[in-house]
Length: 195
Ligand SMILES: [Cu+2]
Image: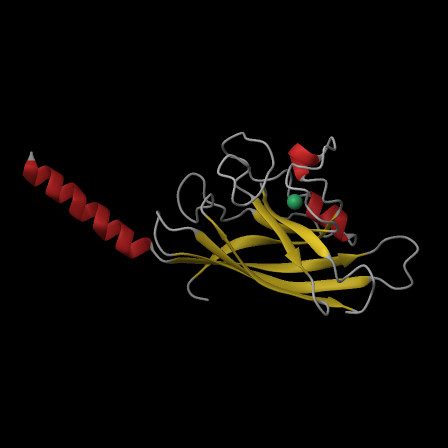
């Protein structure tokens, strides 16, 4: 019995050492095309994901540039989430393209909240600040996985137009989406050999 346990443990260690760390990237693209704006705002960049072991959190490094950088709608706080599906379709309007991502990634069937709340959506990543037309930030989440049945590989990361109220806004959308408005940029998460 002991030999069997040691053998199974050795296999477990071997599989773990072969699989981790896992790296993934989403190429993020989109823009803000509100009617009445003098010119559209474009958004482009990437999100890099790393997980060192099944017990470690997923670290997300987000780097997105908006052009033109000085548009009043650019430099503000906005919500960011992992959504359930990869991006499909080649439509021109970013909100339509990013709507193909479906709802927040929520494998445990909870309500929307903050990235730090263990009982909120796994895909809830909180808010990010845009400064001088750029989002450069790191988010750490213990609710995400890059391997196994709840892996986010093939799902998507979505940036929103407005601040995420993290379930505290007393709005009908608060406990569902954080009432963070339209989807302005997104990308499908794919596994990569290295970052
Ligand atoms: Cu979202």
